[in-house]
Length: 211
Image (tube, rainbow, N blue to C red; front, side, top):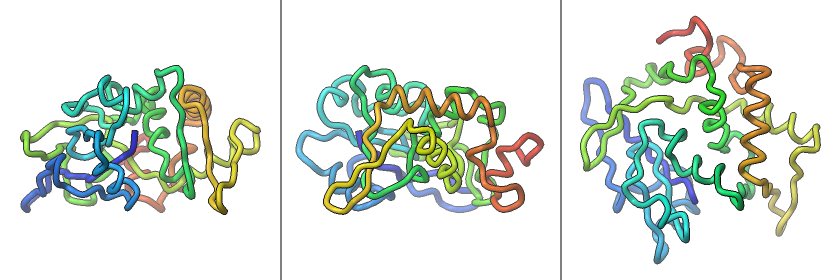
């Protein structure tokens, strides 16, 4: 399961780029783009947060997967967490790119999870693809402060880094990681947000923030 996000949102007052799962390049890195082009790999149809799938997960989920909650219930992340042998592998990256934190926000669920965080970008909570427009809920917000969660888990010896060819990484059971993240967010619901006043999307997620 590899993220191939493209963020094809409906734009306000201008033409909206249309997501085509077969041709729209991944916007989240060269590894992601290379993986989706491999033989036997399929791509889900979610216009903003698609995934490339290979192996048993491709048969279990299928190319038509496009849940209203892009990283929540019914998404490939949901399958990963619930699958007994599911693992999260991170290489050369940190928790600011860990989409499973967004899944955990939904699983709590946080009281502000339905608050759209990206009004400042002139977009709506609607994905646009060759299949048409899709109203979305539980839109993922900013991830710049997810490092706080990473540091807490490291200090608690819940996760441990390894090195492979000089690249630092993590290999963590997905269900266990999700459970720990949910626990941290329940105890401190704003721990994953940027400091108040420094980030529009994070301020929008706080109680009393803009809708």
